[in-house]
Amino acid sequence: MISAKVQISKRVSGIAPSQTLAISNKAKTLKQQGVDVIDFGAGEPDFDTPLFVKEACKKAIDAGFTKYTASSGIPELKEAVIAKFQKDNGIAYKPNEIIISCGAKHSLFNVIFALCDEGDEVIIPSPFWLSYPEMVRMAGAKPVYVQASEANGFRITPTQLEKAITPRTKVFILNSPSNPTGAVYSHAELMALAEILVGKGIFVISDEIYDRVVYDGERCASISAYGQKIRDLLILVNGVSKTYSMTGWRIGYLAAPLAVAQAVDNLQSHSTSNPTSFVQKAAAQALIGDQSFVANMAVAFKERRDYMMERFSKMPNISCVRPGGAFYVFPNIAKLKRSSADIAAELLEKAHVAVVPGSAFGSDANIRLSFATSMENIKKGLDRIEDFLVKTR
Image: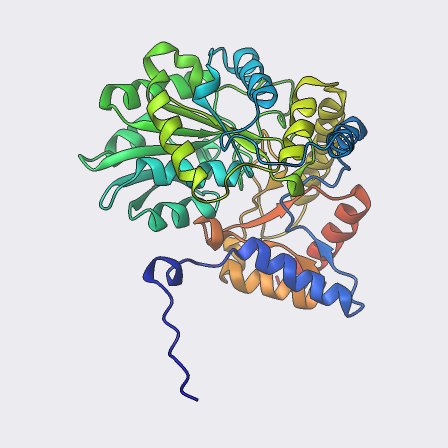
């Protein structure tokens, strides 16, 4: 029998595996072996999905709502999304400008493929969520990184953005609040960036998946506040995963100019078809139902963030910029004079603590820790990290 040589496509073979999932898988393997591992790698809330959301899903299944829907989503969920964008972003959208997808990641993938051609450039502030560059490369475009400094709270400046723009620039990806840094741009900062993007005619994908996870009495600003002048260049991306602790339910959504929305719908119709029918019913209820769950979750996350910041401030050879949103800290470990991958490996092996190396996010001087875990785990894990740092001084 002659075995054929397997040749994976260049498009797929060039994709870097997710280091976040790799760390989580290693941690799970150790746990299965009986090792007490504290996992700071997970990028999902540790709270259960609200009961009324689960009940809405069960009701939809019991009612037989288990068949195909329109590829772009059901009217009920689209209307809930339209109301959310009207309330939080101040922009009125029509149903044909809204696309429901299988998670915000799916929404991002679709819109990048819909907008980008070979040779196009996509500007991505760094540190960045690790999937952005891979999506851009798969679409045949080139990621162009703009390094945000810790001194500026991991936010890029208008001058930096303007310098990065070339005749090939097609898209700017904005993530505020940010994964991995927790950086939150102010209204004034966003308006300054918007002015440049509108002046140059560059699309902006605003990934606002953490928009309800903000602290210190702040309300998340959006670049959409620039108004009608940016509307034809703006793609708003969001979802229910982080806000309602529905990571496994896989529902995301976007709002876009009609031509872009139609292109995304065409693409999606030939890949996933529609998002899961009965989950769409649950997502609609999440958006229009009792929002006290969201506020309570944010309060718990703030308590954890504040505790972590206090602890890191007293540890040797480590410093940390205070995150304004999301549920991550991104401490600087440059004084340890080893790569972030080496530090992450040592912490897992010696301290039984799982963190994600900052190199996955474009910054080898940092590591990422999620505080979407219990306070008990946070205290135990930080005790181990402090002990590790003291021993490695």
